[in-house]
Length: 306
Image 1 (cartoon, rainbow, N blue to C red):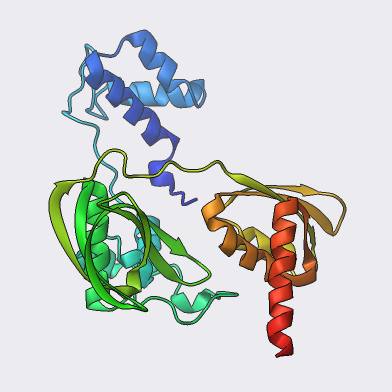
Image 2 (image 1 turned 30 degrees about the vertical axis):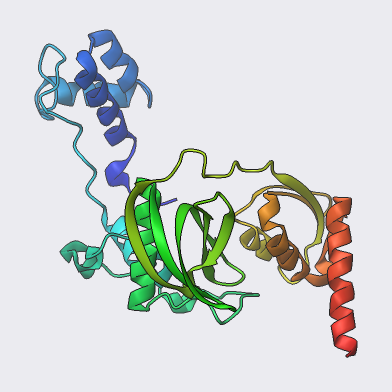
C-alpha cells in the first residue's frame, strides 16, 4: 500500500465532510461526530480551520463553498510508482494513450526498474506486448468489453485463418504462459478461448452483446497443501499464489498448511504451478486433484522413457 502524509486522515475526514455537505447540508452535531474520528484534539483543529475560514470549504450554515469534492492530485510517491509500472508493457496495454507524456509523470523517477523483477517458472515465448498491431487489438477488445459490444475477429489457428463474429465477455492473463486470452461466444452461443497473439485483426461492431452471453462463474474449488519452508519456499509460495484466495496456517517452525481456492477453468494452470515446487509442496486434498497430479507425472515419466 502506498502512503503519503499529504493525504492522511485529516484529508479524508474533510473529504467526508464535504461529501455529506454536498448531499444537503451539514449539522453542527454531525460536524463534531465526523471530525472526532481521530481524537478530540485533531477534531478541534479541523473544526477550527473550517470555522475561521483558514480552510474556506464550508459556509457558516454548513453548506459547501465548493461545487464538488476536490480531486486528489497524485503525490510524488504515487507518480514514482506509476512511472515504475508504466515500464511494464503489459500494464501499458490498459493505460490511457499519451499518459507517459504527462509532464509530471515524465519528470518522475521510477521506484524500481524492470531488472529488479525475477520471474520463476514462466515460459519465455510470451505475447508480443510491444507489437503495434497487438496493442491495437487489445485496446479494441478492452473497449468492446467495457461497452459490451460485439467484435468481428480474424483469427489464425492450426487449421488456418478464419473470420467470425464474437461476443466477448472477459480477457484473462496466464502468468505461467505470459499470454492473454479472450473468452467469448460466437453467434450461436458456443464458447471460444482465443489466444490474443493469434488474433490478426479486430473489427468493432455496433451490435450490443446479448445479456445471457456471459457464462456464469462456476463455484470455486478448494485445494489443501502442506508446505515445507526450505529454500524460502513459503515466501515463494506467497508470491506464486498471490492472485488466488488463500489461507495459511503455521503447524510448526517449518511446516505450513495452505488452502487455495480457484475456479475449475484455471485447474490446469494451478496443477502446473503446484508441481513447480517439487517435494516442498504436498497436496493432501482434494482427491480429484491428487489424481490429476498422478496422471500428469505418469505422462511425464512415459515421455521421459522414450
